[in-house]
Amino acid sequence: MLTLIRSIGNASRSSNPGNVLVLCRQYSSGATEAAFTTANYKLHKLDSGPSTEVSVTKEDAMTYYRQMQVIRRMETAAGNLYKSKEIRGFCHLYSGQEACAVGISASITPDDAVITAYRAHGWAYLRGITVHSILAELTGRKTGCAKGKGGSMHMYGNNFYGGNGIVGAQVPLGAGIALALKNQGKKNVCVALYGDGAANQGQLFEAYNIAKLWDLPAIFVCENNKYGMGTSVERASASTDYYTRGDYVPGIWVDGMDVLAVREATKWAVDYCNSEKGPIVLEVETYRYGGHSMSDPGTSYRTREEIQEIRQQRDPITSFREKLMSCGIGSQEEFKEIDQGVRAEVDDAVKKAKKDTELPVSATFDDIYHNTPEMSVRGCDAMSYHASN
Image (cartoon, rainbow, N blue to C red; front, side, top):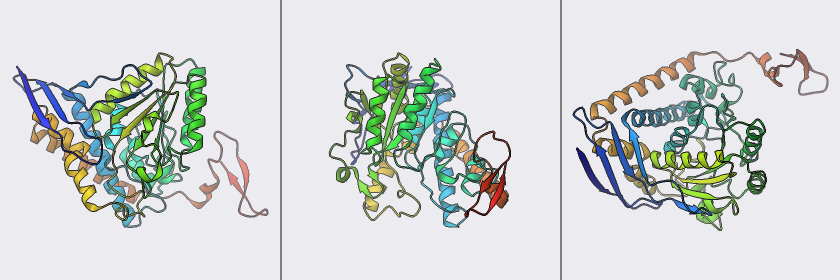
């Protein structure tokens, strides 16, 4: 039979869906598929956009839930490792923004390319890097995905181009990757992600221009988490409609706290790019719970009450779980089992990362170039040289 459930969304400072219609098809063994109505998308230079009527199978729903939980718990573990000084240097956490990466990842293939900024741990996991390898990289161990040399901001994997520490620099790089895909005749896209803080960078507009001029298969994604470091978007941008910033490049605003809305919008954007119409801009409006980085408490420019309100009313993980359970997809016991499995996986990865060894000092001079013969590398002064492999 069909079960209809209507829920009223709570208002918050972030754009929020109003009435949400939940439609699920019930079977004797419980629901195996459910349909939802997302928040309306906002369109720029488009006559039509993604459907607000989305559906999800139980298998996919449980995968998305687990992926978001892994990212949340992994980031919590990274925060604790930073506080205990196991992680040094910069460390930017993704907690609160999980639906953005998981939703986008659900609509692209391993052959599509992704490049992002320095909030990269979750994306590294979704692109196939293990939790252990990520935490080992963060703690500077040789078992890390970049041998412990990259740290928080520089993780790489198959068709995953980082992890970039220079604000906005990944966007023109993403346009270049899209150009390579087009020149190679591949039906793939490059997803280039950046934050609202980088949205005012001049190099972004240069990337938009060349991407549109050459109709490159680039999806430019602004993860608008409401704050660029400690500055709210209202104080930093004359226009906070980031999905319109491409001017002649079409754009879509998406509720970034809804994994299904993000998935649907990305699927539409991929189809748009693969039909050789050129680039598109997505603004996924989301929220980060922590500070800009671990050195930022995140409460000097916003109130604790604001953070708590978003956590309670719009958390991407708990709200997704509640929607699924409301229409019979997944029981309390099933979600608890997933949570316990995630906890065990992350806890085990933490223990392994702590026990792993670091590279020797001599390895400092290795990996300067790719696949080069042994060479001498000058040290800190003109008189010292070191062997490099």
